[in-house]
Structure formats: C-alpha cells, structure tokens
Length: 301
Image (cartoon, rainbow, N blue to C red):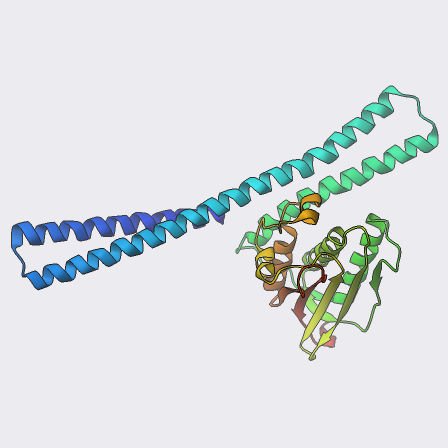
C-alpha cells in the first residue's frame, strides 16, 4: 500500500512538471511563431506563474512528507531491530548457560521462565508487524461473527495481569452486562490488548490502570482504558494513531516499541464500523483511550 501511494505521488509530480513544460512551449510558440495578441500572452503568462507557484508549493509539501516518512521508516526499523534482537540475544544467552553449566532445578526453571517470556515478546513483535500488513490490505475483510465484547476485555485484562505481574488493584476491571457486537475476535482482542498494554507501559513507576466497558446510547459497545501516566498534549491526540508514530518525551524514550499498536487499534475500529480516539487534559494528567464498536442485536449473539 505504501509503495502504491508513493508511485501515485511520483506520477502526479511528473505530470505536473510535464504540464509546466507544455505551458512554456505554448508561450514560446505563441510569442515567437504565431504573434498572438498581448492580452492572450499576458493571460498565459499569469497562468504559467500560477502553475509555477502551485508546483513549488506542492513539491515542497511532497518533499516534507517524504522526509517525515523516511524518518518514521528509519525509526521503525531501529525499533523493530531492537525488539527482535533483544529477546533473541537473551534466549541465546540463557540457552548457552544451560548447556555449559550445571544448575540446580530451581535455577533451571527460572531460566526456562525467562526464555518463555522472551519468546512471547518475540512472537508478539512479529505478530504486530504481520497484523499491520493484514490490516493495511484493503482486499482482506474481517471475519465478522457474533461475540461478546466483554469476554474479549476480560481475557485481555487477565492476560495483562499475568504478563506484567500485576496486582488486581493496579489493573482494575469489573465485568458488566453482555456487549454483543459483530466482530473478528482476534482483531478485537488485539486492539483491546494494545490499549491495555500501552496504558501499563506508559504509566511510569506507579501503575494504576482502569478498564471499563459498557453500552453508549444503546448503539455502541465501548471500551475505555484510563491511566495516570504523563498525559498527551492536545496536538498529539490524533497523531499518535498514525503508523510508526511515537510521542517524544522521557517516558517514551524508555519505553520500547514499534509504533504500530495504536495504528492497529484505529484500523480495527474502522474495519468494524467503529472509531477510536484518545482523551487527555494535558501533561501530567493521564490519558484515556476509547474504542467503540456498533452493537448487534442480542439475538445475533
């Protein structure tokens, strides 16, 4: 999809340049060979000036976009490289230790646990990348089936508590009435998991995340994930859902990632006819991430 977009952009600017050349040729022919009237020449001259100005503005915009895209691409490559190399190096180190040293049973079990955790991290990164590719393909439609959104949220919260070794009070969630939707269970679960994981990772040393799910006006099933982290500036609230985009700041620098999590959240919401957004009162005020899906009649679930 990115390659097609770039090809279209390049083709547009080639066509723009060809149009400018054509106008210059017409002016030359009109002035030297045909001797058109001054009024027509002035009109064409003004038209040429307008084209040149528009071309400069569009070309500058195109260059700025390409520079930003390349910067995001480089940041993504660096992040993915780190996310892949770190668990692989850790797994290799522990396996080599197990091969070369005689360890007691408890130490071996501890090493096995670390290896499994690093394997899960590695698989998670790979899955994020693959899922982004699948979601970016317009030809692949979600496999919609009746499901209860509350079940997916409960599963994601339970997984996060185990994965991040969290106490129940650090990650709060109270299951409520059924929230029937038509959804692709894997995609919905991935979107909710990304919201919960992000809230935990960006909370800082004192983690306190609140997850809630409920119906809105009887039309939408909504999941809200609230944290008490550093907050988000108003200018960043929409940008954070872009592919590869990451907020700059001390906590963001410490937290590693690919910049794909929130892009996946927004893509899943759109593919299901819903929407996703972020709310924050500003720096130091925490953040709330919301994802909504159209509700389905109870009879469908």
